[in-house]
Every structure is written in C-alpha cells, then in structure tokens.
Image (cartoon, rainbow, N blue to C red; front, side):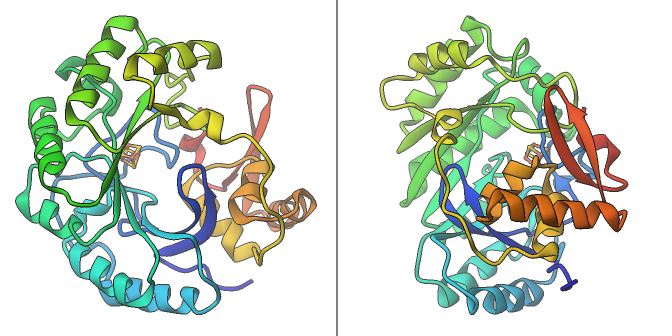
Length: 316
Ligand code: SF4
C-alpha cells in the first residue's frame, strides 16, 4: 500500500468547493475548540498556541508531488484541526500560490481572527469559510466547547474585524444542532449577526456524519429549510447541495481511503463521492482494509460508517 501523506489528502469532492485538494496543517487534532459535532473526533490538543505543527517544507513538498498528478478545482486548508493555529500558515499559502493557479481556500472556526497576524496571513487566500454557530456565550460553551481562555465576544470581534478587512470572498457557515442552537430565538440572533457582517454567502448546515458526541443530532430537513429562511433569501443549505450525482472514476487507492478516514468516519458512499470512485470500487477498498484489520464498520442509525481501528470516539 502506498504510504499515506502526512499533510495532504484527497482530492475529495467537497460539498461546497468542488474537487478539493486538502491541506491539513494540524494533523493530530489540534484545535481551539472541541465541538460536539466534530466529524474528526474529540480534540486531542485544545490550545491557542500557534506553532509549526507540521513542517511547512513537508506540506509544500507533499503538495507539489500531489499537484503534479492532477489539477483539482481548489486547494483548501482544512482537515483534522484548526489551520490558523499553524504559525507558518501565511508562508504556506504563499508557497501554494506558486504551485497552483486556482482558488486557495481556508476552512476555519474563526476563533483566532482577533489576532491581526492571522488576519494578515489569511490575506493570501481567495476564499475563507469561517464558522459561526453560537449567538451567545452559553451556546458557544455548550456547543463549541472552547479553550478556557477563549470567549464568545472575543471570537465575534475577530470575525467582525476580518469581515471588514478581507478583500477576498467570505462564506460564513452556520451549523445547527437539534436541541442546542436550533430554537427560533437562537437562530434569529445568529441570523442577525450573520447578516450584519454581510458575507458573500451564508451557508446553513447540520450534523451530517458521525459526530464527536451522540448529543450532536441533525436538525430534520424540513425544519432546517424553514430555519434557513431566517438568514435571508441568499442563504444556501449545504445539506441540499450535497444531493445529486457525482463524477466517477479517479485514482483513489488504499492510501487515499486511509487518508480520508483519518480525518473523518465515512460511509462507503461518502468514500466513493469523496474520492470520485465508483461505488463498487469504494466497497472493494473498504473490504480490503477491513480484511487487513485496519478499518472497522460501525452502525449509526441506519448507516454503516467505517473508521480506522482505534478511533472509537468518532462514532457516537
Ligand atoms: S469541528 Fe472544526 S473547530 Fe470544531 S473541534 Fe472539529 S476541527 Fe475544531
């Protein structure tokens, strides 16, 4: 089996961005938050410290190798933690810019945007997708479970400053969880904050895959559609965009499946869609990994999810 890369994964078929080559700057689940709904699993290192969690040279060398094999639609900083925690993120974005002429995207929880250095480094990106799930401190603590030195007000102030300064496109993602932030008063207050910042897009999402905690339940589709209208006519439901046929047939191998499962538990269909494989190919690769004892299947509701052995906390 080819050796999985340390920092680069995919390209995966992203619901929001198309075929996206993923760049994971915090591969060991390093984050400022420990969200109930996290697909990667519980945060291992809850921190506000910016460090070089993986050497920038390794990231760029792996990206160059992968980009030589084919051109994705976008290159995205995302993965198993919070990319803005990498102390050389700006340099890495600059290096990626030299390797790839398409859009550079960053998916971030937005909590470090109060740091002018972070905002300045993100200026290298074309599209930034920050999150806003809570409209008050209590919900922030309950849902996002932040580092003890992080407050809702500070995170919100950073997000507002970023909206004022950033020259590229901002797509604000709001994730609603049943029983936690989906009551009408909470959603109205979130919608007011989101609309005041006037991002290019507001994207409404709910818990979709295996989450870190069983307390993270999806908002039923009909209710989610109704709540999405509170954000205005241009708000877009990500769950809706996820439907539809996907292009088959790229080069996913066992290493790429492992790379994907390292970042989140997936159904066989998620693997097929994420790596652009025929359903039968995804089934075969997952079967092979199961036979080798590297992957195990877990039932969640009516769906069978696959996870790497030893990642028990990923499926609630
Ligand atoms: S969902 Fe994102 S922000 Fe929340 S814990 Fe997981 S990686 Fe961190």
